[in-house]
Length: 208
Length: 159
Image (tube, rainbow over all chains, first blue to last red; front, side):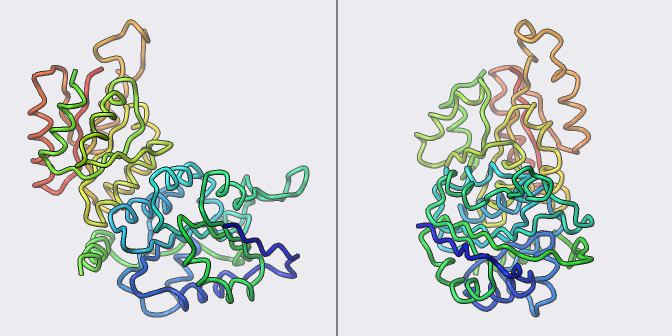
């Protein structure tokens, strides 16, 4: 299935409100992985869920790969990976790997703001800025070409607010592209605590 | 060096649930036997850095993964390895093909011989160099030892 809300956007979706929507519709047994800007803002939204995995520090765009591993190990749980567009560009092959692994319980959400936000908002190589045609990389098309069963693209807040749960519940693996605003002055997220202890807490939560 | 059946049996014996791999011409030949085994799932990724992070996710989810790549892929995957093994302290075991160790005719002057072992040392991976078919047990013993110690380890397979 492919659904696109391609009506011209007056403004992009604010990152925080896009995450608030995800937090509102997220089910209790769903694992949510956040990285970079999404991790920074997710940590401000309130109490953390036992199945939140704040992937800070991270490697270059590997949230999708950690998500694939978790989905393989926990086939009864949906794994929602929040990635930036810059991060996803660093690890585009992971989309093909997810499809090849035949894991229906993975949802990749790319928060596409066109910039490396935490390093000072330099345009990514996929951004429309500087390209001859002015068009950025089409992440939805990339996901479709890799074989994702369900692809959704949202460019305005009301559509995402209304349809988020439906998109998450689609036949997976699922890819969701959100056209979000860069956060001015957004910096790299701080680690919310010792990594080994946080890894252990997640493992314990998954054993319950 | 080893047949696919030997490696597959070893993986079963030590309880490996998933092998995450990018093949080379030696370790790639083990894939059919691993796939046939029914006890170890093969996970193919596009690039070696992915393999360490998929393994990390599998470990967090309660599985017992093993990364199987060539040394050239080890070079590629440094940051992913560093993050999984050292930042997150996830004890991932790997089997790494050591290109040109036994056969230097195909790629004379192959710099894999210069960099592979220093790179493993730099990443603080406790490894065993396997140069003979009689050393299958060394891989098993090292895997079991690393698992017991909760640390990463590798078997470096001469090719």
